[in-house]
Length: 339
Image 1 (cartoon, rainbow, N blue to C red):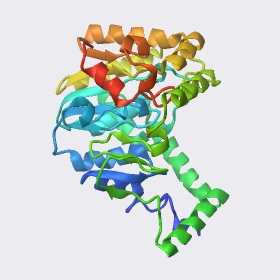
Image 2 (spheres, rainbow, N blue to C red):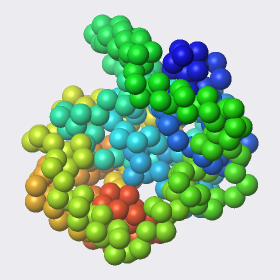
Image 3 (cartoon, rainbow, N blue to C red):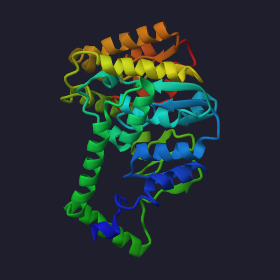
């Protein structure tokens, strides 16, 4: 049953949710986005948007997903993905190598240079990463990784045939189809008002959080930030004891290639003030990562905006959704004052 119902389209991607979302975004805002692969959606988006130039192309993690046309007051295509790693940048920006953008904003998080970050989401675009890596470095040393990831993906799909949770999802999918009420199905959204229970995406790729997240109060955000700062380990910053020099060199190569056709800006998304206090006391390398990025920007003669430190970024407690996600008002302050 799991193979034939296949609610997540693991075995048949001809009409995948990711393609459906990309097609809908080509026309306007999209609601009801849930249980999909963000990276594959960005791949399909680029196939559709290649001939439509933008003032800004944005890539980063979920901490950069609020950067849209409303923030930049210009045309934007935001290709950010949750938990972005250096591999995501290489893969997605290689797919976007012919995309006409005047300015490319690289939203950079400290974990990008932590070799122990544990980020694996990029493997959805493993082949694209290897192709991008080869173009940047003229090296084929990671060819075996492509085969490994292909094997892992094939095994993951095979396991789902016998997986109890996937069986439950299949049954629910069958029931929803029978009742013609698949509430989580992506749909064309006529506005950008928050929805109950589901996130949405604007046509420019920026995120519309669900109602509970979008309407969070200052006190609730502070409570979430305190909890975030107390977490062990702090997201993607575990065992962060030194800058990953290979990752930094690859990032520099990427910047130099991007500068051939576009202006490049670095963006450092701030943490909530309460979270930042805990982060820098537990993981001093966060400050070191920012210092390294500022030196890189100075050496490469590119603009840098924001700071992991909210005070330096001039963002206050009421301008965050939680410990790590700044609101649009914070971003507008950052981009419309000196970088």
